[in-house]
Length: 393
Image (cartoon, rainbow, N blue to C red; front, side, top):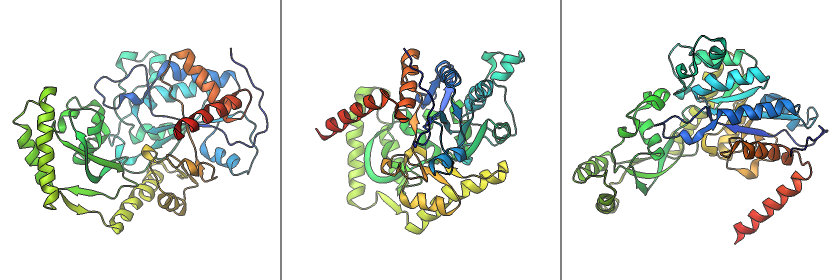
């Protein structure tokens, strides 16, 4: 049973929920389809917000409350979407307009579809001009779609850095590629023009050879890049040709031989051909943080004041660069110790992978525990205490 709590003056800043993809079902063949939240459950959350009288805010209004410039009433909430997926246009935006719920969309310019097109969405289905089966939700937004969303007053576009990629930062091998999400960033970096449409590429997972060595990689904003000797990949490709790597039983033998090749190159100091200089890293960081702001401002003709770090990875150095270049705040991401600062934005996951009833209860609980309402606050404290004890053990 839900308990409807009365709004109250609160010292807490509003909760900020994050999502990525929303669709009726996950795209078959998309290696990151685990990011997709059920359209049915998302609409249920919107209905909950309307029923309980919540006011959806953009991040400038959120920051006014967080910085103490205006009081919160205890009924504010922020919804944010990362990455700029096409399904945000196809499903999320029409539903948000229907329920009068505003949201923030964090976009990476390199990922946006450069074509000048506007595709059908849920509003067209409601109008009877197309069917649900005719909607295509595979890909990223175009600038035209992004601009239409921004101009609607329902969406506020902000920065998600320029590239949203990861780079190799260590020669430590973490595994070998046989399809799946670990190949996304190596394939992106080898085929940068593929980014905007990779979700619809049926051969995407085969663009990286099976048996390809996978190294430790980090988000572009914190990575000091290493360049692995390209000759090694040619050697391992020739080595892999002697095995049927579609057979799981042959992979351990191949991997043992491949590790010997890598070991030999490491011993001869030929594994790494280049280590990124600090000056080059800072130039890339400027591109990710400052250039993304400039591009979005120019293309959308609006100020960009907020930055969301892809993968949650960031440093104080990157945050300070953002602040000095005109951002009002950045997400705290994995630096949870920063979440109490007024120029940081802590966020809560809203895409609960549970049955509809349980998903609804989690959403209800997270909002009320965030606002420190009882009994939710007490349950939250017990849960946190349990985790701290288990972590120590």
